[in-house]
Length: 232
Image 1 (cartoon, one colour):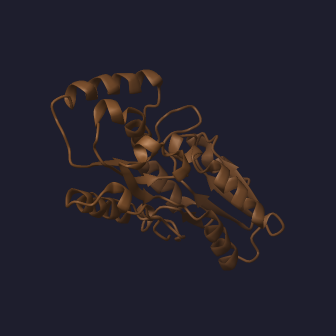
Image 2 (tube, one colour):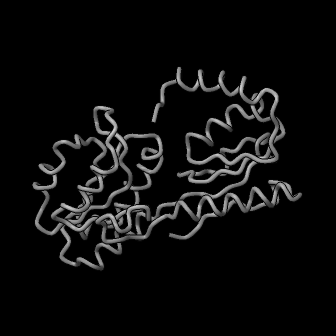
């Protein structure tokens, strides 16, 4: 994932040329990056075009400008941290620590405050450590230092603390060799070595977004199509 301002400036120039003579009945923007980009440049790139978002975390309806309200609906990706911590504690009542693995990518930072705030509800029961400064080459050494009764909650991890991309097969291998139970927030990890968790479903996000897009194409105004938040 590339996040530099130069990259987005170049992408804007490219899309201006690419979409100059095109029009769409609806646009689907998947994840925070895409939705922020479309929101920022909607007038320039897709004037008068409805936008359906999905996979957007830390969504705040109040941040939608009056101009965009008439065009925007979508599907919020809400990851229920508290329910996951409750589940882990229920399954492992001797729990001493939950080690939360994350990175500092935009989508991860979007829920950092939520993770920290919801972790505070359990401060009298067990310790929660949020770590988004990880060298994946030495992660096993970090895990080896965790207390005996620990569990791991995996959020997402695309790049290490040095900005290097970490391929998924390495993350998958970590799940499978972890000496502690691993829970996850996204069901794409089911069957990869995690125990489970209250998870978001990307397939459901995409399906719901597509259904909303078709409602709009078939005549509904975007403002009349409610923004939804699927349960984990």
